[in-house]
Length: 442
Image 1: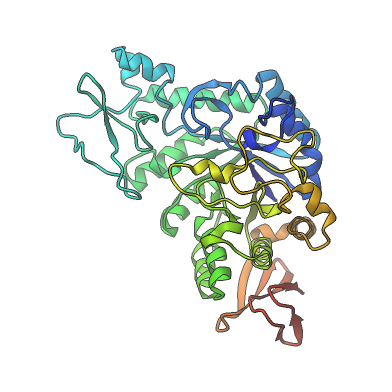
Image 2 (image 1 turned 135 degrees about the vertical axis):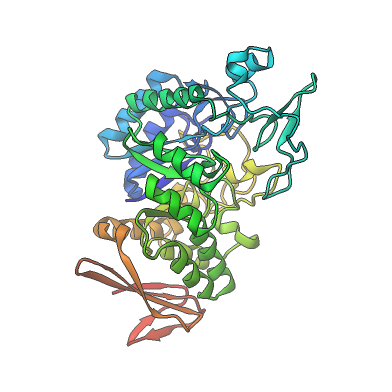
């Protein structure tokens, strides 16, 4: 299985307004099939105020510029007709500030007030987020404080209220009825206060629905493992970072340690990736990787157990350095042509990094013999021929050499030996010659 993460606004335009949309996604299906994609993960498509869409104001309507329900259903049908599943990003931890529920709560409606989390006399109003020390409690003009873990524009939902739980289950049922194949659950570890409570919440929430459930649990292995048994698919942040760090530092030790933590002996499918919307792009890691190292990173990604996931544009070497507050720079328009003027090109913003004639486009890279795009297509073809690798076991054959990474992938009598060379010179392992920054599979 191969996944592909898409920011709809930047991907492909279907009505010539410069903004990506559902009709545009239909027009991109042939490219995604050629790339070997089995499922697409669409970042939030619901009505919202922000560019990123994680502050939903209505779970039953879509961003107007993306299209309406008819467009959405037709897009789903087109993907299914081509054998591609659709996974939606579903942020149910909170709503947007302008959601009808929160606006009614602000006006004093007791029913909807209980949909959110409010400070009491015992609340520590100076409570901070663990990852960046930002405040969690936010004031209103009348002196009340509400909880918004992800900022004042995203008030937390109150899942102590069973009605909130049922409201969000209705949203899930509605989307499944429209043909959605699964969900990526944003901020999945923050639904409840403790690990035990959080696991219990998700076990109950997912108990009567089926699909691809992909969880964002950015935490240590124990926490990921506990949730993985429920979701079935877990974003592997640990190995994602360590692939890039190993290639950048030219030392495989950190990657081997990560694989042992995050990929060995799991009873769920780790979803491995090289970048996403919450971090700098692969090609811009630590200021920038050479094209050779970008290719090697992708070779490693596609030769590990688990599900490989491509962040749109990583297959072209798109660049972008994640810095707050201007995080949209990692969401540049996807460049279809060299001069970014072909039909389907989005123009909602001028590219921050991936400018015309920079070599980063589908048109250019299909013509370039040794391009990143053709490199990754080779590996997607390899995964198509070896579906069993998703659940393969990994056995290390060389753990001492920092520039040579050798392991065997094994599953029910099938096996492959993988050799990665991280040096700038040819290396030999058991008679097999491996070119600089290259991979051999035997």
